[in-house]
Length: 159
View 1 (spheres, rainbow, N blue to C red):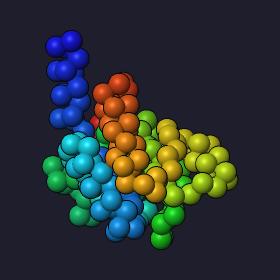
View 2 (view 1 turned 45 degrees about the horizontal axis):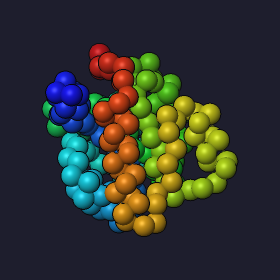
View 3 (view 1 turned 180 degrees about the vertical axis):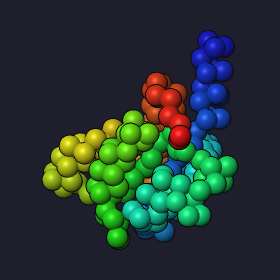
View 4 (view 1 turned 30 degrees about the vertical axis):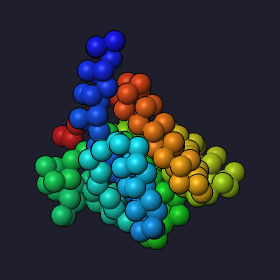
């Protein structure tokens, strides 16, 4: 039992999330749900697909990996200005050093075509944002339990 607790704590220390979300109210809701669930990831936030690609490719202001570390998980909205979440996902899967990075689509879209295309492009999970706040907190707890405690992630590093 002790080793499980230590392993979970170690996972918490390594929790680095890139949230790609253009809706400021959804960003606040997601942050609030993490706090309510007592989960404190290091979270970087970008508000469009172009910035997500710049972040992941270490372009411009995102060149400093101390300030903008490689995420261990991406929470990706689909419907965004400039580049959509699907376009960002396609780009990630084409990058040899990033193609194993876990990407969880977190969206309001319940469109079958979005769901199918997300999985076709390599999404690791497709979650619809709950309307009820307590259900949102429960979803965040499940994301934490699966992606940061149970799931075995491949080692990723930038060259």
